Amino acid sequence: MTTWRVASDLAAIMVPIGVAGAVIAGLCAVLAGIAIVRRAGGLTGGAVGVWIPAAMLSSVAGFANQWMPLLLASAALVGMLVIGGVVRGVMNARGIELPQRKAETDSVPASAPAPATTAVPVLTRSNPVRAV
Image 1 (cartoon, rainbow, N blue to C red):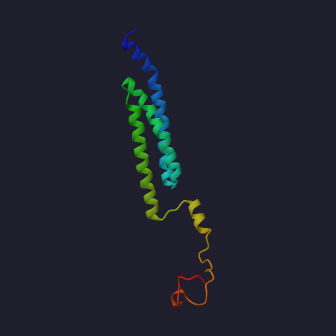
Image 2: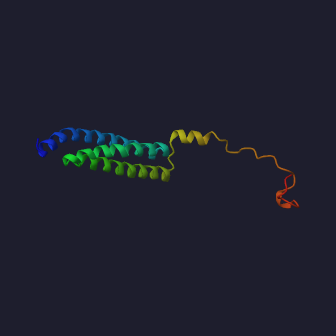
Image 3: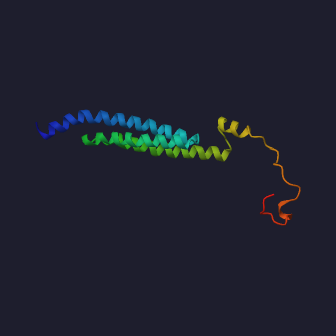
């Protein structure tokens, strides 16, 4: 068997594997962009963490001189990270808050009772460091 024949047989296997890796990497990139908008740092890190092996899998198509899956996977991650950051910045600038975050901040009462203190203010005591 010639080298050309072996390369051709491998290309028939490697290109679909690379395309599958690029699809998985693209989905992870979209998930990372959405997680940035929702301020979910752990989910963003997890999505990028799964994107890395998927992008490596998409580079397998490079053995058949098909670099488009790797380029698309990389462009998807960069694009979604930028879009997610821009959307989050616009939401912060306009004061738009996600409903779940608004519910968390609204549940805390605005005027919580002050803790009980002694009758003598701290600065007028003879030794403010000493325990009362």
